[in-house]
Length: 301
Image (cartoon, rainbow, N blue to C red; front, side, top):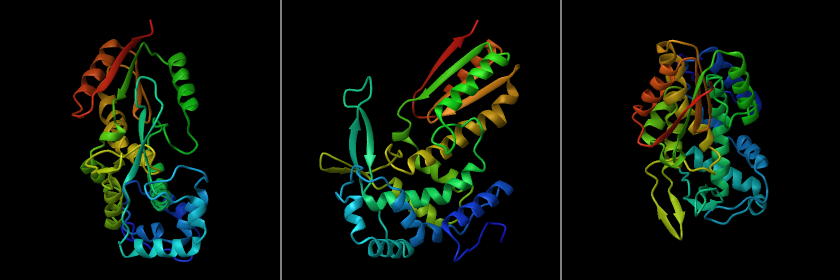
């Protein structure tokens, strides 16, 4: 085992490998993993990803369903694995569709991946997730195993009732998922991921484009909602941009006690003093984001 996390574990089960990755990530928070790609391209990992996909879900631009792919499953998985190994795999454009959402005439846009893209997205997620779960802040609740909105609300309620909290600031990043900066996303990934093949694969996924009304539009930014990998990538991005910024830098500068909660692209901070809440609003507005952040100050007195 080198200082950059280079290793090769052959003959191990998928779950054993993930457990090993998680242990290394937890014990060495600054470890940079340089050999992960063989797990992503592993046939057993791809097969497990296939089994995890729910049947009957909407198909991508190629129209291939889970049932159709299963007709030649082992051949398909072996061919996919070989393409991944030689870096010959290319993500297909995501099929744009809309789901109803209050306040939006067309609804909320989501991107539907092709069946093989879903397999690869899930395979990548299974490899990366243990690394980041070991370092994510307790303040992050969205799209994480064993965490849900009810836990976030319960902890927020206890904080308000039991701590000296007089003011809340609610914040919402408008259009976050569709406007994630790819360059910064990749820089954040490279803090822990030293395997350039993983970085190249994720870059291709991010830039695979969106098909809508028969036309393909290039993806210069964003990580579309609907993609299996998007929630994890979004949490990684906001871990560096918001969570660490608040816990390691901002919190030390306030007069009174402060508490912070984030669920996906919505976050909320609790303050004892109004001046701290107002300073937080000012700092968030000056984060440099190209997306509008809607802020609301609430007094509990």
